Amino acid sequence: MDTFAKFAMSGLELLGSLFLFTVGLLALGAVGLYIYDKTQTKNTIWRNYPVFGHFRNLFQTLGEFFRQYFFAQDREEMPFNRAEREWVGHVCEAGKDVVPFGSTKVFQPGMPIFANGLFPKLDGDIPPAREPFTIGPDSPHPYRPTSLFNISAMSYGSLSAPAIRALSHGAQMGGCYLNTGEGGVSPFHLEGECDIVYQLGTAKFGARNDDATLNEDKLAKICENPNIKMIEIKLSQGAKPGKGGILPAAKVNKEIAEIRGIPEGQAALSPNRHVDAGNPDELLDLIAQVRRVSKRPVGIKFCMGQVKPIQELIDTILIRGAASAPDYIALDSGDGGTGAAPMPLIDSTGMLIEDSLPLLDDMLTDAGLRDRIKIIASGKLITSADVAWAFCVGADMVNNGRGFMFALGCIQALKCDKNTCPTGITTHDKRLQQGLDPTNKAVRVRNYVKTLNEEVEMIAHACGVDCPRDLTREHLLVMQASGRTRPFTKVWNPDRYLSPERH
Image 1 (cartoon, helix red, strand yellow):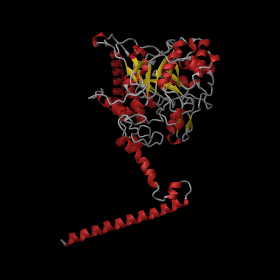
Image 2: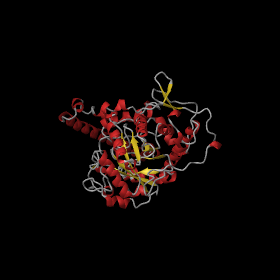
Image 3: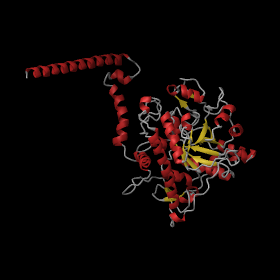
Image 4: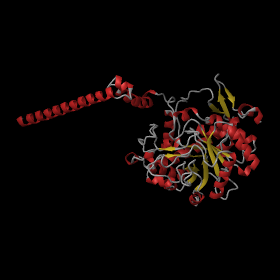
């Protein structure tokens, strides 16, 4: 008993000593922090409230967490609310989605409502799937996409290797295509042998000369791979219209540098436009050059802002002939994207897809180019209702990036630009990447694609048409401030967007 008592007393004395030592260290640290705070001049709060002023930064960081998980309602959070994220997560796991007891959606002015038909399509009345439409019918290698919903531009570099591998295999399993983003074609994009859209950003990574002009030999070499189905010339994106892509130096490792053709360890900053495409004629020349070298359909991607330059491009196409037109236009929304960007560009630059998509559709229709140029809509269209809306107002297909990030396990931690993504999606930290299993996530990607396509078809059948491509604006109503709805009408009006002398 005496031995046990002595042992217990020794343990208590050790714990006491450790406690006093810890308190001493904390006190010493607090004194050092106090001296630092009072002598530094960069932070006013720290200087006026030494030591305690640091709690403000801690509470700001914790506030973001508590708002996301405890205080924000299911339909309140931005950029994507909890209801949207949970819907994507559920369909990725279960491959289907049903909810009980009614909608929690708050109907607001401008919100679209589908006009279901009095006599919807019976399952037995639906004809066999029609032939896929063709993009670039005059190209040596025209493309016939098999999915109406596809993976938008996300670069290797911005996303990790396991994330790109999961997307590649998931795209192959789901029958959709994968856009490489402006970072070039990586081995991880090709690993799943899915259909690939190679995006040529303003720096032309992977097929560039040192002056950011096109290197034809490199482009031709890349296009020897039969999985490369289309080329997309990116003019701008919704995350940062008017500014080139940004990949921090910490993410530019040796492999990424080799794929992009840039120095290792230096930030990859793309020009804010193509150096060889400064007007409509030069852009059409670049499209023709890329089409000739790649032997693939060639499209352009932009976020619409000023309408006049779009009309000038259309006018130039009409002068040069419809064959000079891009085979498709990927239209992005001005409210951000997967890429990190300055807040003024995310918040306050570029037209939202709700406005730009019907406008572009009207402009191309009035010019007689709508059949020649396909429209691919992009930007926050992550649910089947979002996608069906896009078909109603003019889209031929829909691309999405952030929905597929949710499919990979993204929790909207908003750490994409810090190389500290807790889910391993946007980081090159091997410790954080180990939690992302490409095999498991590929199945989630497949389920997401499969469910989206099926549910958009379900909406089309409810509206009385055979397939989503038959949806039109007559199948759409718009909620008014009065609580009533109105039909969705034509939006293009030259008197509104162009000067009188222009038209």
